[in-house]
Length: 209
Length: 407
Image (cartoon, rainbow over all chains, first blue to last red; front, side):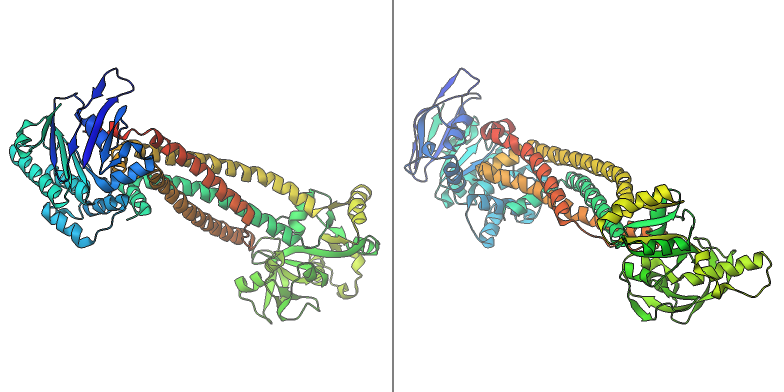
């Protein structure tokens, strides 16, 4: 369960204060957050991921106020329970696809066997690139790897930041399908923030900022 | 997967940076360790060669030349002194031993030194085979000489005049090998040792021929007092001798007394300037290589800030990122220490080989563990400081901003 209470955030060098509506998501529920550029979508996502500390208010995940956690506890919590997908996918450039997934598990302190990694790679059509370096991947492969990195450790929440903004219609629906499929498989909440109205129909819950 | 593997893969991802850092640090470590080990080894070797020789008495001239020629056998003698002076010195109550040596001939570049049986004792030389010299024209070979010239007991050879190999000024009489010393790693290893009579006999014969004197040889019965030796190696009964005798000889005789320890200290002070200069160059290279490590790690932190921010989203703590980057620096430092040590040993091997071929003298490479540890600690310390400076930006890393900017 994900719940936010009276979340506000102010950047040090800016006057404006972002005020966010409360969010409550039950287990396995998904949410699409729509909004124009500069409205604070990414800020909200980073608050939900614990990457930013709110000026006021709180983020509660599974009855745990993540803002009350110490830095190391928050790192641990984030590593084990949250998966992040970015508009432009990234991975650790010095590692291969397979090593990236192993590194992800290492940082999350989770252990899954080689077969499960192979199954995930197959689901995301990345089997042939298992030992490729990041620079050898196409944009589409990189995007799918980003999803794999976000779900490999079985997170409780998948947070996606503009995952489809730069994609054509076909790839947009492929990525959304994969995200929802993986969220369902992991029984995780999926929260997508975007200004891309094409994906509105994929969600029951839509919040406009 | 662990932090070390990630660090090593990061290093391999930028092999040129890693190579440059390792190469420059290895060179400075090699220079530092090599030059100091060489300096220590040569000083030990020279000091070891002194044995218990506290004073050398010879003809007037440069005292350093006298020591280099009569103790280390790497220079020309200053001249000769009367053998009667040996007897006088022996009778002095302050003197424990006065060992005369006479040289001026060589066989294939190896010096032939005429002396008494006491000479071998100065260097604790023991016979490997054969016997000590008993008669004129018999020799015992230093171990290096026997090995290099492939001479055995019973072999004979003809010596040449002078201290360098030549076939023009050969003497007429031949020497016979009667013994070979065990290796001592001291100067005696490169000498051909005979008695004083042999040296006198060789030269007396030739003087006779030159003067065309056809009278019967009288040298066997000639008294030693009329003869000359090159120098006298002296050890004292007590420190009083060391304090008074050299000045006494230098002021009141036509000979000079040189103190080997003092002269070698002086020599080391001269060569020490070179050692210090090379050490400073090594320290400067060390500093440059640590700056290279700093730049490459700092650049890595900056260039891969998104990678590092990603690792934070994966659950890595700030401290874990610190360790991953620090491990990269540590891997560079330890590989450099290994290669630096290897460079030093290779360099020393070539220098020792060169020294042996130039001066026919083995140098035993000795380590000063304390000095080596000091150097290694300095290298590690400076490298660690540069690593810390490089990873400092991690403290101020704003993950949210990096992730937003890269979006």
